[in-house]
Picture 1 (cartoon, one colour):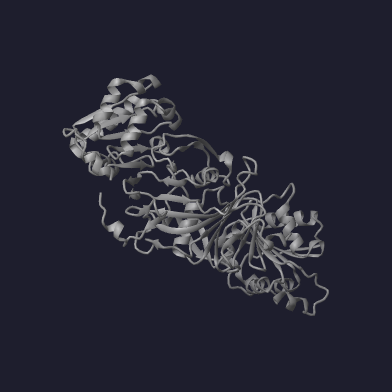
Picture 2: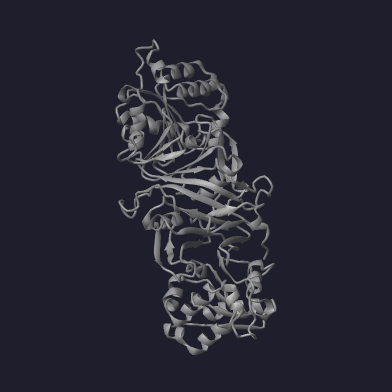
Length: 292
Length: 292
């Protein structure tokens, strides 16, 4: 329905992505060899005709990281790329930036510090408009590492590993709500973050936990299918049927009880229905009908 | 039924444990302060009237580690403790050891290297007799760290962390089959072993994955209840309803798909039914009827 609406909009000169999606990347995506995930971002944004915005605001070296992604996407043939190098919140209302967002077809959030990214961009006119266009399916959004962490309404701001799940193991904050009902963790198995994601989910069991490994991408399609690509896994923790937790009654450092979670480990090519909350069988018709 | 049978045996002078169990300890159990887990082992073995056997064969320093546990249990009031310091397989048929196993009420397997422990003791008359008496509910068995790893038929011999689940992440071997249908991992969240236990379970999805944190104990009761005590958590991975895995068709280092696992994180006081494969509600009558 929404896709039909976007086709009917009058701005005929703007390249129109036919398969807008949200790409949530677990960090350390391949930038040198096949660059499969970054190629997919470019393709979903309209290919060489795309108009890309790179937002490096999570990083404390935004010039360097912005330039790096410009170089990569230029190498792939992208003709129009702008770095929105936002370093204070006022720039989030900048007319130049806002008008570019109207014509752009793909937005890329780099890595860095997710608290910095949210501090600079949450609730700015720029980010509100990006969210609106993303949710209308008009532009493709990608975020890697810190840029992935901000995707949910609830965000993992930091944490630790090597402990039993406990609330003190994870620091929660408010994210950019691009996919409100998920809590994303990244560098997931690489940095042994299962216990911290479980700890986060104990506080918000109605939100789906999504742990994304490095050089791995969870592609959130418009039809509520999550598709996995890349070198690692995407771990889904579904606590909607949680039968018991001690979360509310124990101290912040006490080990957590979490009874009756569903867990899925998804690898390249796997798909998960965000409507039915279950993986699609590799032979399921919904699966075979799709390709990148 | 079996407990009644043991009461009817003629050896009336042997202290009879009324609540024999298998205590699977995640390593690094408290040996200095409350010693809650070790106290429970002693109580389940008959208290101060217990006859204990310490088997330090997993360790390359069996004298030191054996003496340490002797000291601990003596401090607690145990009157009869023997170290079965088995250093070659022939000793597993030793008449002295075998006759002590007939009268003892509690056997403790220390930490060290689980492959060494199995290499020395698997399929010896001594271990066969211990298993028989444990499974008849005549003696209490405890194992910590390496001594915990050997409990299942399939055993995690080693492995790594910091990677997406993959078969090469874990080395499997054959354990001592005290609780044949489980695969135990220990130092679990402390050493970030979720990915390796998932990798193990991908190969044996009919076996229950049990990940035990340090200073934490999964008490396997005679009535098929697993009860948790200690400072951390016990993680249960139930793959019996696995809907898909790529395990059989991908390379050893390829990331694994594992769709539709049940996951439970259990903390102190929690109970899990090994018959119904679900946690018992804290208000469930089966729960309230039990105490250590």
